[in-house]
Amino acid sequence: DSEFPTDMQPNPNLYLCKENIGPAKFDYKLNNIFRLHELPVSCIIMHPRKDILVTCGEDRLWKLVGLPKGNVLLTGFGHTDWLSNCCFHPSGNKLATSSGDTTVKLWDLSKGDCILTFEGHNHAVWSCTWHSCGDFVASSSLDTTSKIWDVNSERCRCTLYGHTDSVNSIEFFPCSNTLLTGSADKTLSVWDARTGNCEQSLYGHMHSINDATFTPRGHMIASCDACGVTKLWDFRKLLPIVSIDIGPSPGNEVNFDSSEEDLLQRNHPSNKTLLRHMDTPTL
Image (cartoon, rainbow, N blue to C red; front, side, top):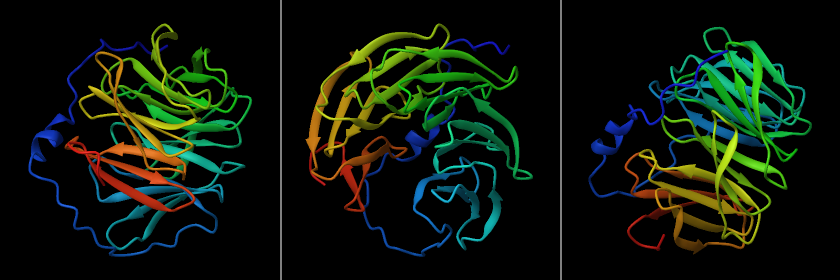
């Protein structure tokens, strides 16, 4: 079995926060449209170091795409139902994908081959995340559980019980053994991955939580729910900071930019991506 590393290691990505300390400039223009999937796209992620991205779709495929031209470098076949989420290994040379077929798959990006399939969830898997050491993957599912998978021993190390409805999102705290989950039971939970214990639950949302994430430094949490409400939380004090209602369209995804000064939320079915400066509650 793999060993969990010492907790609270320095985050190697913090230099990105220091590089982006100037005022934010929101002068974005559409440069290109890449038509890659025959069915809706469920996830897009950027490679941590290269000018490539990965898209996942309801057509059961993931695609590795070169930028800026949008040329398809690899196509991943193997899932038997829609893909919900994907994430890069910390080294950038592997990919984890989650699917409605109840599995999590790991892929070698040098060849596009599936190298490992994790089975154990009873329903669709909504989200997956890598531990910063690269030896563990965590997943969250419609079956109300989350699981921690050991890549080296190829088995489930722990199942996280506690949520009473679908667990829609999961994310490791940057460079630590702490996990954050968001659930349709309207709560956020903070877990110790080493023990599988729930250390704290955060209450305040009135509707299903669709996504939750940490800032790069890990001092703050953002969460969004099915009625378009976004909440910011102080992770050190485990207390709410502010609540922003941009409904009624559901908030499907929320994320911070590397400077931690701006927050993006993607809403459906309005198909809007909203950018919000952290110093003010205005768009």
